[in-house]
Length: 451
Image 1 (cartoon, rainbow, N blue to C red):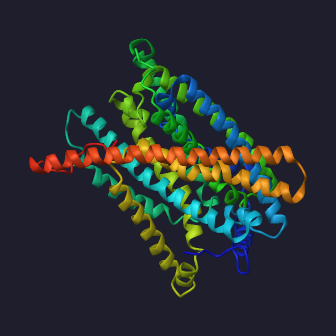
Image 2 (image 1 turned 120 degrees about the vertical axis):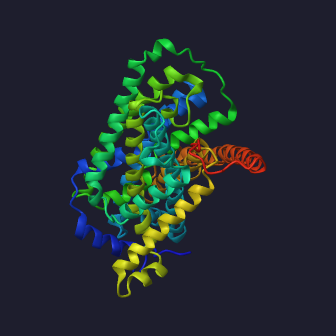
Image 3 (image 1 turned 180 degrees about the vertical axis):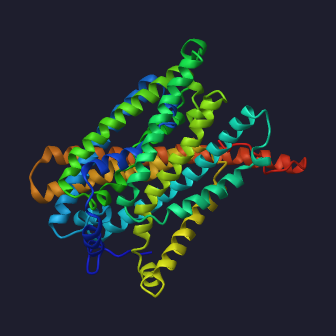
């Protein structure tokens, strides 16, 4: 499959149209959208649970510093690409340094990475809705909600319907209200975590162990940390909508200050309470009460809006494909676009169902290792390395870029292997359990969460 490159009738033409129409966002829009999308607070404690205090902290320091720098490099590379006549997009940034091969690589990684992100989010949201259902059952003394107990498949279908509607949003400017709602949900969930710990005196009552660290879990921790800094693949496209593209740099710094404060409080506080018991989603460690019910609903809202942000870039990229453009150029393109976007969303629903038993921690680790590592770690350094070779003679900076490129590639290989191994193991366990259930004639569709 080939997408329109930055040559001829390129994405730069599309970007110029985009700039004329929506390049009105102030810098604070970037801060809100980026913070809302990047915050995966319920997953962050797992990084310490899988790697321990020392290695987990080392991974957080490494990932925060590396991704902050790579975000700055993305800004410089995009500005240079635009000055040379390219567009405001990640593929155009890579094409400026590596030609058509760079463009195809970036498009492939953007589409595959955020597609996998959405698959993971579908599983997450369905689990959160099931957790909310359990909370309602307890509060109503086991009375079925609306007279019916929903199973994982029911929740997945409901989530798909909501995602289909929101997938029609086409610009980051159109997301700003929803991004603010998403960020408010994140702040509220951090406050609920603090409440849960304080109200139940968990720091005193829990006596967690901080052992149980293995090589596989350590690599999963590093890959999951990469997953938690996964917004870089959207940065160039967000720059396209800024009123002043150069305001990207202070907006990036403000975003990282917000992320460091939120992640730091949530991650270390939760790990201090639950230690090695920390689940891939920390909410499943909490007591089943009204606060957990509220948090699970807020997480579902956050997940839907996270998916919507991903779809803005993802579906706009898909619509640049010549085959899709040919359909949209015909009469009734409004209906064609809605149908194409809906079809795309439901393919994600299908794969979310297929991989629901793979273990959400493993899925997210794979997304972090395979996709976000490329878009966040080594691709920005590769683009900047190419820029340095063209514009200056800074050998030390070139060597540093090469080191980070190699480190990113190593993380991709090792992290992908460990996460795939975990998914295979989880799937085998799931198939074994369901095979035994079939022999015993147990109904397979239950309300049990797929964690």
